[in-house]
Image (cartoon, rainbow, N blue to C red; front, side):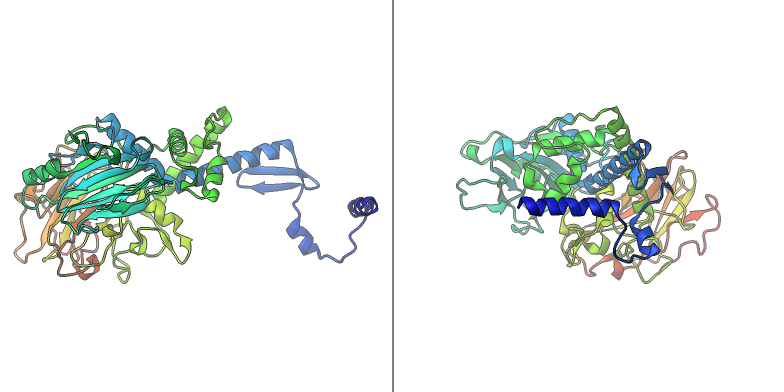
Length: 515
């Protein structure tokens, strides 16, 4: 053994000092080597026969940490967004699983909630399985709902699209790793995380008051251990209340992600994902204490991540986003590429598709992209105007909706702020027009025109959504498709673009093209 080791060491020494024995082409040597000086996007890098200089080491590590920070930002938006919703609701008074955030007067533009609508009754809460253990959710009849885990991954449906089929039912949420007895009589949900988002939505087709009473009389959330005598479920009315649930895009993003990592089981995410997060200093069971250099780089990473998510939003470069892919002129897109709410196909995760959704929406369920008639909802987004430019809040736009909008419950056009991705704040508390709106004028042929402008065009106030002259804003058509005669937006053609008008009251013939 000693003789063998001596031979190996001698070989290594001779190999290092002597010429190469095999013939290797100059091209091959160039491909596996690096010059003493090389120009790169991060500056001029220097080497001594392949060994980096101190300045180069510092530059490439700065770049590596910044790049890793950007990747961690983009790959964990779902988790940090859920954390922002949970803490935002808690700060607004809905803290604890049995304290339900209920928008009794509908969700309006005072609240910063990404792409929420004003047309249905929302109820939100969070489980805390580490604190409460197995948790019972008594779901009222007639609801649309689901449970997402702490990374905003779908766990299960409730209500119309769930196993209770809209009749109402009792659900039991089981903590990860739970080994105790599970009683009969419950629909089981088994998330991999402790803190999970409960989303419920009720139709107001028969009035807001009965919809509220259905929830306040029938929705109950309590620990299974207290089932014999549960504490009363409380409802916190958050309508017309200013609070924020939108995640940050600065250094504090990573502080929020650290809190998620500390709160949740280590195996809630894969070792690969944990490794990427650990590479920027976030490790379960350890303090997150970056030095000044790392704070600066992570802040830069958050800025680049924010910019990247916005580029993906407004100019996606992957397939499956266009609602009318056969029409190159159509502006309409979906937040779910290929109607895939798990962002995974053929063993591959669609990274940019996942960013597109999580940056612009909160809560995910297959019911949001179903093509089955009578189930779930469907959505279309218009992100640019007829000139393929960002919407300008100082201009006037017109959107044409053909007749026979294919819905059973409602359709609505809602306008959002491009910064917050929440309802645009103007003098209109509810920035929505649609089938539930009073005073909306229908065209003689059964179609509708919707106007976006700082001031209402003459005679069009019922069909008008206000914009801010100094802000940009984007409209989005939002439709619930329960009981449709036609399955999917593709069966009913929206106008190609929301068209910009040259001036209020000017000639509008031909500005809106109906497909």
